[in-house]
Image (cartoon, rainbow, N blue to C red; front, side, top):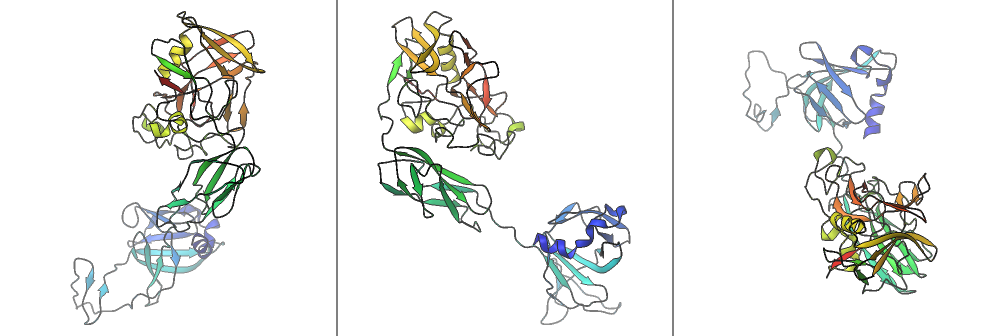
Length: 446
């Protein structure tokens, strides 16, 4: 459609500068030139024909819709409220008063064609060639309905070697023009997927199966596939004797031991990504925005950042700890993180850098009962890949909370420790872009 009208109005590139060099003029009934702009898919009229409206995109279809009937000046025709008349028996006529003229120029600014405009609607322009008694209609071609959402039958599955499962995709809306999807695996050595969504387990490990709309909309859905040994259903926790009664898990989500980094999650996303299975952590791949940080679709307290819903903590359905480990677990709140990181200041714990199996991290030991937890410096993932060491040589020990940054809802709260093997600095009040990938250390209550 767009290419067709551009070919019909090819001449617009070098047209008269007095009419914004768009290649044709639109004249009003009084002979003055209407202000307008021409886009690749529509014509926009300003103060010339009706109010400031956008018409198009148009495709000349050369459809004769009626004849032009001439009447003497002494005759009178009465029109109905809808603009039609039954002037001649057996026929219906629509009153289409003269609106203006479109003059089409060639690249040398020479007029090549003159069209009289009789009616404009949101989807049609009724025109006739000068001296022609036949009407033609330039009609819009309906815009294709793009895919808006893909819902998979499973968002995470566990398989044994050579086991198979078929994922099904529900493509929405129902009237989407192209509901074709493609399937791909982030690591075919672990699990492969065919074009029907059938997943085959090949080796122990974890990968992401992505189902992507083929219509160019960019919509996709993902399923995490774990082959072989799973993280145990019963996750261990440590009681540090904190006043809130918070119990901290011994491992990160996706880890098997305290020193393992585990999975990386964008804030509010519940499928974890090990290593570089998700290649880019940016606004273009983030679940709860329309491609940039001022277009949040959920968890927003400021209209400058998107759709306001005033949610300041993750719902259970968006809490990775709850989804992955069960309803008794949560991502820590900002208050729980602050309590943990300030406990050494109140004498409840001792905080020190530690190395476990070659991994640098933060060790917090309770001065009440002697229990301790180890938080490895897992770094984080951004739009360029894995980040572990800052320019100053400090290691990052970052962990998500479930709390939103209310002042800047494009960010969420996190722990913020910089460690070397001899020192640790703490600032739990920092936040970071929600699209980045961080580790999660779940919590629960007694």
